[in-house]
Image 1 (cartoon, rainbow, N blue to C red):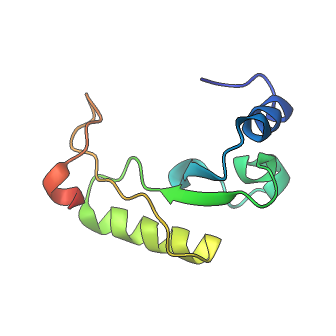
Image 2 (cartoon, rainbow, N blue to C red; image 1 turned 45 degrees about the vertical axis):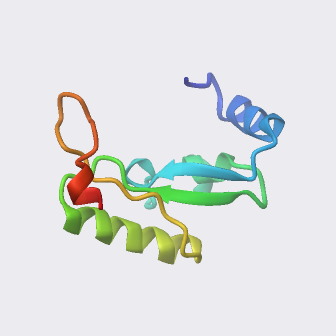
Length: 96
């Protein structure tokens, strides 16, 4: 589900009452100001759970997860390794 505007995303996130939101790290452009990427459109105080989607190797997923821990200054991460491009199902043994 997408949103027409960043403001609509922010309002929907607030209305959900959620305290935690998953953010795909590979889709956040950290070279842009916060106001120009998804991080600038999240409610204040919400815990961000960095996620590693799109990582195809254990090494890539672990590196991405470590970057997420550093970026958000907590130990929570959602780690997954993708098994194939066609289905995007996780590679369960690699994720474990």
